Image 1 (tube, rainbow, N blue to C red):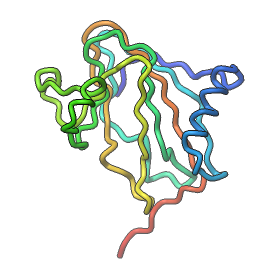
Image 2: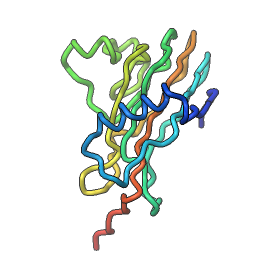
Image 3: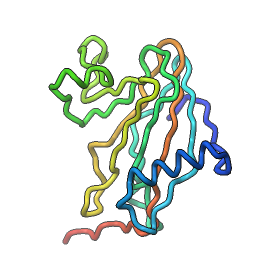
Length: 168
């Protein structure tokens, strides 16, 4: 599923507290039932990857990960992008600083590949407003070909999230 080294950040560290606060402020509309999960740092070295997955799980009944931040702390590598195979590729060339626009660089992968650009971040909502999972956020950490990638995951957990009613 994943080849990487992971470490949970100390929630008492002042830098970690500041990052969590900024993530809360970015999502100012979130209610009192939301919290920022412990921050996870992952290091991917050559051949490191994370298979395709969702950050949400509709089988849960006690809440869910409603949003995700993927921040790139180190990106001195080739490969290692974050691929969203079901998202359409933007046509505006201004995106090419942070997404792979060259078909050769996409290595045959479909959708959008966010490059591991140090200091950049991706944010996405894991659910539609009706509570159903957003299938467009299916993603993977592509294999690192050379160098190293370090990412910081920030997930927002909502304990009030409820599984949508099944339609009859």
